[in-house]
Figure (tube, rainbow, N blue to C red):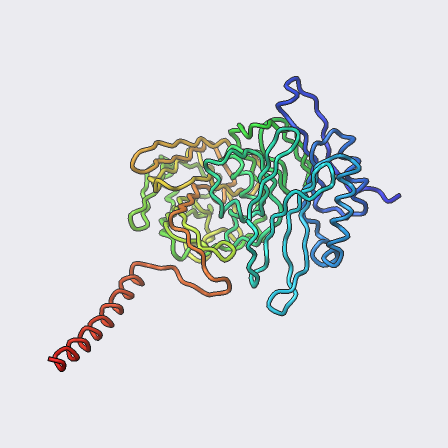
Length: 439
């Protein structure tokens, strides 16, 4: 019998019993041989639900066996009496061409498919809801979504506190990629999130490589820490910050501590900074204090954002502000970032580091005409980016896919109305001439 791939299953017994559930997550780097054996291992370990993330072999080698895979998963779930959520690819015909569609498929203990969330490729329209949910017999309701849905969907007011997030996407902004945004989203929404990068939430979270296992509290995530995972400096892409307003961080003034304000039009970010530099301050990494109030591209959507951040820079050039190489010798003894966000904005701490660590973030919100949000961090080193990512849902609008669009600036709006007024004046002139001739 072929050996089953590495599968982390943790069976823990808590006095609270019914207040927790056990999840098993398959190692996404493994090759799949036999779903029955995988689910049997999970069940024997006490798991209530088995999550199977995207496997590296899926897109090219398994799309032609989609129906067969569904049957194998159904049989495994029924025989082992276990819930299974699996991320699969299906090859579909769209506009006379073959393309891939991402599916998150949920099986109950009877092997029946209870729901599917679908994500089509850019040339296909899919009316299936991007986020779906299902209830279990162990008293937990799960939301199921793809990675980009964490950015797209407003889950405020939802009664769901447990999510399965599968299906990677190519984020155009690094800090919104699944590996970095998932723990932040779990922290901000107070939710348990089961993903291919790990399990984030309330009690007994463990991580070993890409294998994640946990016994989770059913009521969600009460952790006040965010685990960050390192960014490789040699491969870190530059971020297009051409629409941001950026001021350089003054490391000389930072040694004594100082305050700075950066505004993008009427949206302003406040920074209270105190730094220490190990070594020569002239050779230390540069940082930019940034503010942005506008739209970002997310999978064919333009989403409203308000962002305050301190970002490491190879040089203070807007189109290459994130570090390409350098020495992260700057220690932030204190850093407070605050802003008055729009009332409809949801807020997420934005953190990228060059080393794996756990950062304690103090988040404060004061409600009034606007929302005053503060991110406070102490004695932090190896920071590449830290800030507040605000999602302003009022500004969202959906763009036609594969259409190149530009940010709508005030100048664009003024030009549009000037153009409209010129056209109206011509029409008024023509109508006036017509009326005079009829008199």
